[in-house]
Image (cartoon, rainbow, N blue to C red; front, side):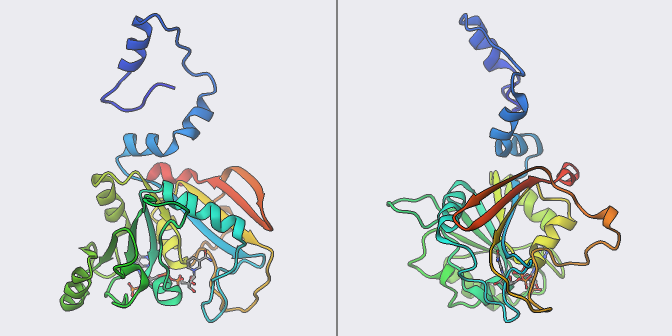
Length: 268
Ligand SMILES: NC(=O)c1ccc[n+]([C@@H]2O[C@H](COP(=O)([O-])OP(=O)(O)OC[C@H]3O[C@@H](n4cnc5c(N)ncnc54)[C@H](OP(=O)(O)O)[C@@H]3O)[C@@H](O)[C@H]2O)c1
């Protein structure tokens, strides 16, 4: 495939050709684009490639009715998740996930100097506890708390004292479109949205999801009030439901991993 970077604009091809190297363009182009999906999105749209990832039980719950979600998936997927996080420039959750799980949001892999993605938390009024593990000195990487005009400036100062970046984007809730554009301006080329359901719904509704990774654990949770992967208003008519394309399934340990792409991101 031709490099979509306008600054390159075929110059690489020309240079190789002038050095006498035979070039074939377009062979397996779809596969080449898939291999370069992050770069192609970033370079052509100046925004990160957005992956939504969630783990759910076989009955479609991402946590128990009381909000517990740890230990849903097996070790083999947990390892893959940390490899995936390491490849990402940023990972994002909502404040309810911080409150429910107190996650570290790091890439935990063997070896020193593991590249850590930027941690991004959507938190309209700064409910994130100052004692959150992701803010601890001992947790590697940088945390960005994205808030709104409704936040308490004293809490923002306390978070900054702990080393967090505090960014204001939006009046009532964090404006995810503005956030994604801002991340693109700061050269964040890939963003992993890890939940929960409210945050995933905002990205879906804004047409900002490029790829979905759904991990299905062979576990039944039950409970009418247990959260599900995509909250928000949903659609009334099945014809309006979003359908993934290029769906692939694989088994990882006892879990099933389904990946697919959303066409709506073309509007994002
Ligand atoms: N199994 C999994 O893969 C997985 C992954 C993550 C979480 N979880 C579970 O999911 C549950 C939490 O999910 P949740 O849906 O209640 O909450 P969430 O998505 O983690 O957080 C939602 C909150 O983020 C804040 N927010 C700010 N701007 C937002 C925006 N533009 N869009 C959406 N939210 C915005 C809002 O609170 P403010 O108005 O206060 O800002 C909102 O209530 C927990 O039980 C957790 O364990 C499971």
